Image (cartoon, rainbow, N blue to C red; front, top):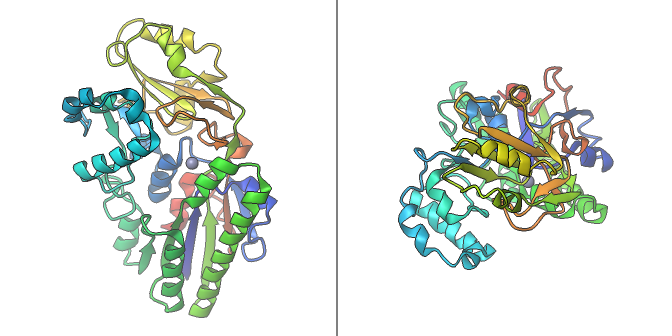
Length: 373
Ligand SMILES: [Zn+2]
């Protein structure tokens, strides 16, 4: 049996159903619980079947002074002033490219809004290409498993335009060159962030994906072998309902970053490492009016993000669905939509759509791997 898996970043269950996305050729459909975190959490989860507590990827940056690949930036950081200039989007884009090249990172790399002077104390999670063999070592990924099983397979190169990845996969199936494919597409995520709720923008984009996937379906038919085609996603998109200014709240405490506490403020999570006595109580008080809550250890375990080594933080404050931390270490402006909330949020729900019945044990994003491997 030939099997093709297509990943569409941020194609939520709500959108898939609303637009009747490929309901004729993919009649077997299930709403899927997203993996707590972001796309940078979901992709390693999809590629390994493990959750962040095992594969170690929750958000891009963690406070980890001993592991930071940016230690040498301690020398240049004082010269990277004034702050305003280095916070500009285009400048940071160029700086990201320079840092990526200097450090030889092969994974996706972005500085986002992280203050440059904090980098020497932070670790970055995607230093290597996650999709290739050994990309998530010591945990085995899809490339490792398909190779070990001797499967003739294709895993999309995320650096190529997605139309090219679809074309390559269709061609290989038509010619009977492969038995498995994982086709990766990420562009819909950015469209959703900007346009969530705007049917006039989203519907044509979703229709365009449907057309492309029909092309892949035709190629599978023309290949002449029995096949299964499955489309899945990692999460949906939740419309903006408000913002929370974490830096302003923390500033009022008088605590010093790197001395009393360390933090990484993601779009929907504020993660803290406590370095001095009393810091935790002050931050908790400063956050008391924000819409959201501090995750309990039980919740972290439930979400698969609990780690003894506290890699992801000593404490995590999760915003309520629709609330974005702004400014954050990810950027200075809120987006129209965001993901990374509690997985029970209906807007966050992902989808699994297939030509074949959905296996009964595929309920969460971490279950896709078993279906593929
Ligand atoms: Zn996104």
